[in-house]
Amino acid sequence: MKAHAAVPVRILTHNIRYATKSPFKGEKPWSERKHLIVNELKFNTAHNPEAFICLQEVLHEQLVDILAGLNSSTPSRSQNSEDKTTRDEWAYIGVGRDDGHLAGEYSPIIYRPSIWNLSSWKTVWMSPTPDRPGKGWDAGSIRIVTVGQFTHIASKNSVVGLCTHFDEQGEVSRRESAKVVQGIVRDVEEEAVWLAGDLNSEMDGEALVIVVDQNDIAWYLTEKHDVQTE
Image (cartoon, rainbow, N blue to C red; front, top):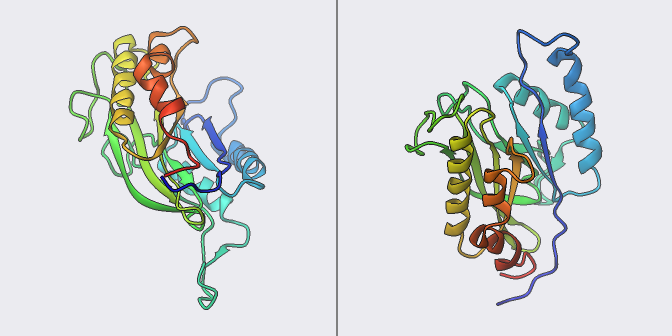
């Protein structure tokens, strides 16, 4: 194995609360909340260019607002010094869970393309038919996990990131979703792996136990891959 320098990666995860048309008493509308969320994300990624942002409950219009806010400062210059064009600092991967396009909530991964090269990505539905939209088991809502493979441009280190949001109603769905995550991680061969999201689980909940404590997933997530090597 060829050793590389360590890459300090910061991973932010935030359930932003979808932009409901029927807010709870005292709940602020998205038009008032969005600036606070963008400022928080900017503050927490300002000094870590390798940072990833993972969000849950994001409708398409909210994603547009967040990206516009994150990219409102000076865009990043192209890495080619002779290319004087500019581009957005932040990009994303993800789809709306209801139709695999724009409808429904996203679980996006937001990253800086000047730092990370996106090698591949996919959306997996938490259901017996993971390649197309649909609810699984006893879930109250359609659930997904967004999976991206990224290569750090400077060090050539690779990492696979997962962002998900487990169901809040279905216990079976949470358990089976944890197994889906476990299977995705097991299929990773060379890269480091990270997982972020809202698992709707207590610390001793079955889904969380599967994700962090069972032998296979814990070994893959904490021991198998060192981000300093390839």
